[in-house]
Structure formats: C-alpha cells, structure tokens
Image (cartoon, rainbow, N blue to C red; front, top):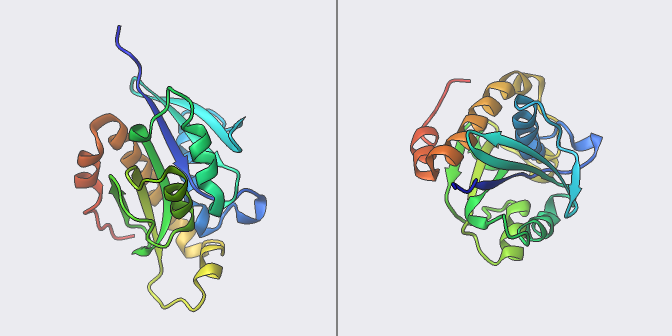
Length: 196
C-alpha cells in the first residue's frame, strides 16, 4: 500500500489584527489563500501555531501559521518537526523578502537567512539551513530609510491591487514544489518577471 506523503507549508508572519495586512505577513497571506482554495480554516492549535490540513493531489499538506511572532518562529517549527510523520525534507517555509523586487518570487532548496529574522530563528533552532523556502519580493522601486517600519507597514493601495496575482502565482509555486519537486518549481517560477 502506498504511503501518503505529508508536507508542512509554513507561512511566516506576526499574529494579531494590527499586522494582518503588513508586508511582513505575506507568509500568513499565502497559507490563508491555500486554505480558502481548499475551503478549510487554519485553526487547530499545536506547538504555538495554528494548523489546517488540505490535500494537494494525493499528498497531505499541513498549513501552518506560527503564533510566536516572527523572531521566534523557529521554536514553533522545531516543536512541529518532533512528530515522526513530519520531516524537514518535506517542509516549505514562506517569507517576504526585502532583497527581491516587489512581486518576484524565488524558490530555493536551501540558503542563508538573508537578514530575515523568521528564517534566522528557524535556522538557529533546527541547526540547518537545508530546507525549502519560497520568498516573495517586497522591495519597492524607491530607497527605504527605515526597513523595520517598512516591513511592518500595510501594503499601499496600489500594491494591494497587484497582490492577488502575486499570491496566486506563489500558490502555484507551492503546488509545483510538492507535486513535481523543488528543481521543477525553481526552473518554472524563479525566472518569471511579470509586468505587474
């Protein structure tokens, strides 16, 4: 009998209404979109996270929103990975990325934190950077004087109009990674430079 693959898709963000529509919460926004497309809610509590279960083709995918605040995301992730059915090899972490132009996405099989505190926390807690991540660009076309304030600001009205398309493309990248592998997702999505 074929065993069903279990995947963890972890969107990084900060809990609370005041952070809901901020740039730093793109990870939460994407797992919320995947949940709404599957008509489920992410509400089961485990490891200081909210978890929801969906199916992508014949794989079980747990959608996760750590509730620890961004800088402690690794504590929640390390706790979740203690369950034998879960593995770091089948885990995708979704983050915003200030080094990527707004709307660009990057799938990577591994890599450094790149200055992102959520990734930094996960790498520190797991003692490895060897996990798949999907980064969604938020870099504006103008200089930023205060990066901390910028990531915690709400999206501008202009950017919000483009966000749905970006999140749809990112959701496709998650599905491709799970069903066809990270190499296929990288070649399919990392080179896309759509006009937004």
